[in-house]
Image 1 (cartoon, rainbow, N blue to C red):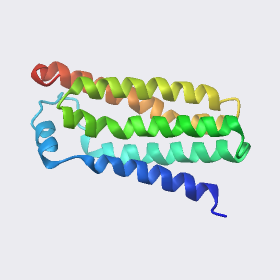
Image 2 (cartoon, one colour; image 1 turned 120 degrees about the horizontal axis):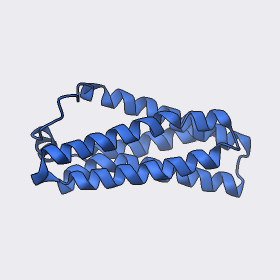
Image 3 (cartoon, rainbow, N blue to C red; image 1 turned 180 degrees about the vertical axis):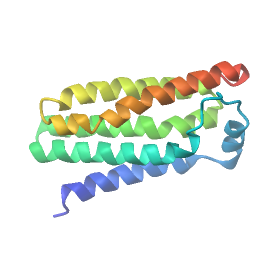
Length: 157
């Protein structure tokens, strides 16, 4: 039998590959947007998201190990999956539709779902809930940044 950490890690990895649905034409649009002067950490964003995805997968693994195969655990795994899909969809959909509002909406949906996930996970494992903190801290920053991009680029909102 394949260990659960490998399955969770593989699912996380393959969903994250969805970010490769970005075309060069889409990237060109985003690269031409005006950015806030305080956005000096843009090059670190891929590293930040890598840490967030690893933390989320580790959180899911801890929850799975507490009660593997139960209905509640499966429902929580579905919620972890939904949060990751929404998160990964943020960039490709925002770029594809050339709509910062789309990105902002997906960011807010991801944040709301992640807060719900953290609340559900907390009674199961404090560590699993704490591992969701990077997502819960970073997502409002990313959503706020998208909102600032909308203000600086109203034609692309």
